[in-house]
Image 1 (cartoon, rainbow, N blue to C red):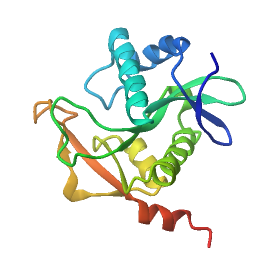
Image 2: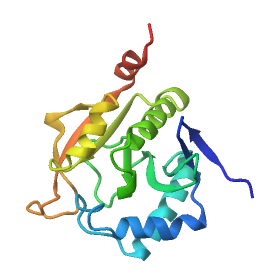
Image 3: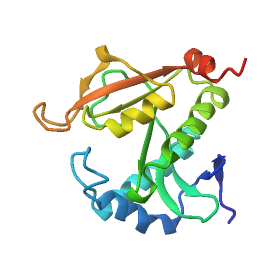
Amino acid sequence: MKETVFLETGRLLLRAWREEDVDPFAEMCADPCVMRYFPEPLSREKSVSLIARCREKQRKYGFSIAPVEVKATGEFLGFVGLSRPDYATPLPFEPCVEIGWRLKQSGWGKGYASEAARAWLRFGFETIGLQEIVAFTIPDNTPSQKVMQRIGMTRDHDGDFLFPGLPPDHPVAPHVLYRLARKNWQIGTDDG
């Protein structure tokens, strides 16, 4: 079966999930350092379930969180993509489409998240015609917030929220919200 590549950048392939992604993905999601801004590292079973949900969203919507692979080597780095949230309790700003990423430690600090995210923004705005894309994380996650800023997103201070399903006093319950409207993205990508 031929592999589906959704998007391609100078260095990266953003592609469909494969069975051989399960082990490196589960290893990444079990890494306490990678998962330090989440409620907990994920078990292998939860990682497999997350992949299944991503595949289902891909079938349903035509996009989802997708694996990121280094073109030159085939190395699995993690994931980047767009997603329609489907948490048990809706986010206060739904309906929305979010952009998100999670990379293994060896992929940090090389611009991979920003590079892949820009490709997904272009897809979201130009291919499927979204009017806005959001991103969110906890206040302490400055690395992700820097990516959000690099790709043109702006913090919506009035939109900060407590993540549904977590106790309000949980360390990762408070979240900051970033937004990018299509019109602002077009301004940022206009070559004049």
